[in-house]
Length: 101
Image (cartoon, rainbow, N blue to C red):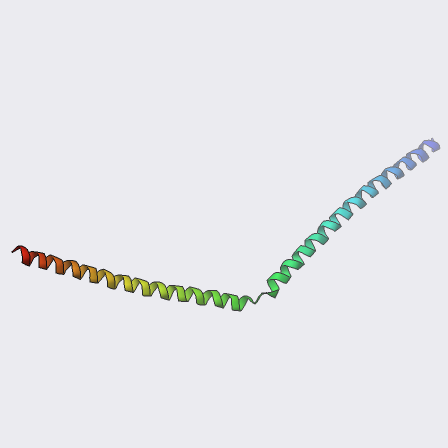
């Protein structure tokens, strides 16, 4: 009975060592994955942190403002041209009416 207990304890010890070795491998893989993620985050942080976001934002804001101003100017020009065309059409109709009467 004592020899069975010793054999069982030895087998349990081997099982525990096997499980421990498997867990060590899993921890190594996880550690490698975490380190890779840390490196990736560090690189992203460097890229984001190194940019002067305030000046970039200001440049984009100014570009949008200039674009809006240009669009308004183009709309005003288009309205002016549309009025001129309407006046010319009216003048042509009046000339046509004068010539036909």
